[in-house]
Length: 248
Ligand code: MLT
Image 1 (spheres, rainbow, N blue to C red):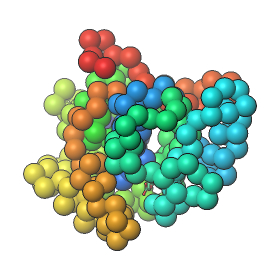
Image 2 (cartoon, rainbow, N blue to C red; image 1 turned 90 degrees about the vertical axis):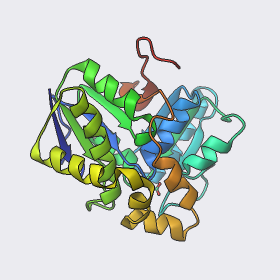
Image 3 (cartoon, rainbow, N blue to C red; image 1 turned 60 degrees about the vertical axis):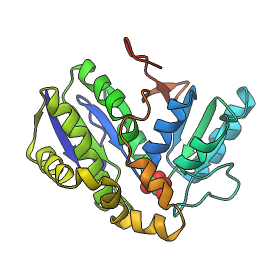
C-alpha cells in the first residue's frame, strides 16, 4: 500500500485511492466531534447557500438537521451554529441527529473527492479510526489537505503528516510528498498545538477568540468514529463507518 499527500484538493476526484480528507482547523475536526458524539449523518455542502437549501430540503423530509458552518471562521447569516469543535463538545447533547455543514475549504474538499472508492473525514481527533478504515479498505491512500482559499495550509499539511505516520507505522510506503509531511510533523509532534497555532489560519482563529479550538483540534484519538462519504438520493452524506471490534 502506498500513501501520498496533496497539499490541495486535486482538480478532479481520485478514482482509485482512498481519500483521507483533512481540514484540521476546523471542518474535519468538527466532524470527528459530531460523529464521536453520536450524530448519524453529516451533509457536506459545497457552498454556504447550498447549505441553506440542503437544510430546507432535508427538513421537509424529516427532522430538521443542524445547520453549521463558517465564512471567515464565523457563523454565516441564518446558520444555527458556527464551526467550532469546542462548541459541539460542550453541548450537553447534540440538538439533532443530522447536520448540514458548509465551510470555506473543508466541505468543498470532501465533495471534490466524491468519486473515490472511499472518502473519509479525517483529523487528529479521530486519526486512529480514520487510518484503520483506510488500511482495511486496502487501496492506496491519498491524504487530501483542504488548504485555505486555494493555497497551501501548513496546519493541514502537518495534520496530514500525522495521518501518514499512522499509515507508515502499519507498513504503508510513503511518496516523497507524504514522507516530507511526515518528517515535518515529527519535527513538531511534541509541540503540535503551538505549531497549529503558529499557522496562518491558526493565527486568524486566535485573533477571533478561538484559541481553545486549536488545542482541541491538536488532540489525537479522542474519538473512535469517522465519517465516510456516500450519495443518497443524489445527496452527498457522511455516515459513521462501523468498525469491527471498535469501541463506539
Ligand atoms: C475551513 O473550511 O477552512 C475551516 O472550516 C475554516 C474554519 O473552520 O475556521
